[in-house]
Amino acid sequence: MRTTTGWQATGPTALRRTPLERRDLRPDDIAVRVDYCGVCHTDLHALHAFGQRTEAPLVPGHEFTGVVTGTGSRVTAFSVGDHVAVGNIVDSCGVCDMCEAGQENFCHSFPTLTYGGTDRQDGSTTLGGYSREYVVRDAFAYALPSGLDPAATAPLMCAGVTVWEPLRSLGVGPGSRVAVAGLGGLGHLAVKMAVALGATTTVISRTHEKRDDALKLGAHDLIASTDAEQMAAARDTFDVVIDTISAQHDLAPYLKLVAMDGTLSLVGYLGPLTVEAMDLLVGRKKLSSAGSGGRPATAEMLQFCADHNIGADIEVLPSSQVETALDRLRRNDVRYRFVLDMSDLD
Image (cartoon, rainbow, N blue to C red; front, side, top):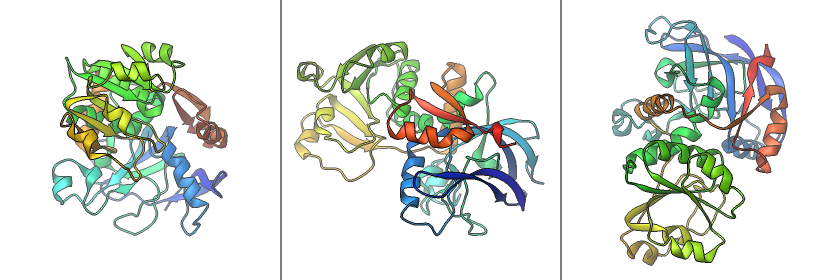
């Protein structure tokens, strides 16, 4: 076994620095020195759940960048010293229809998650990127294109690909009219990507407070969801609405913004929904969802971001301040993504 250091949960709000064991390299593995790891709302959810079940260790973190420090005997795509990125999926069955279609995120036997997952060979619990080293199958690591800032790229590996997939699958491009509901970790990247794809892009936020931020990100306008006149004026306007709001909310006002044959895509809140069929019927509107991305889409997203100079807007903290980052994220006190610098684990 390989030994590294990381931040392991001791409760729903606490982590402690501790030695961690990584597996010895299998023939198709690479070892990655984790340099930067993003802090995701999923980490908060996992920690909350950990407070209710303590049978398995929890080391969060599923969006990170770093440098290859070792390779297995059959690895040819990477060499020691290469800069790489890893997202929230580190394995899949590889043989189901979804995996063969390059949609490992929809693997019929469920993908192996970067943390809190079950290793497909030895049955161990995967431990995440809040650590100085990670061992991963080479097929689920991605070369970091030159020109991308490693710290600002880390959130692309979860938040970025989560909004990239619906934008691409729904055919967003020049002439498209896109609205992004919610301007946070997911939303700000959806705006950047939609604009770079050539879409006329509008932000939907509760108030006008983030208008200047929205325009700086490239959005063409901002509509306040609490402004009844603005919402009424925007009815049947958008071909695609990317809904990044993480809390449960009424979908009806957002469906009204969707144009005929358009789509409301949910990528934030993924719990139970109540929808009036008439809100879909009038205008032949569609309701969809998306989460994470397969290997081809992830690689495409990274190259697109390199070509268009897209990275997350981040605040970098030393990993020793992980609890501060999580607390502030819990209070939505970040614009727009925390990233941990893991070098203080040396």
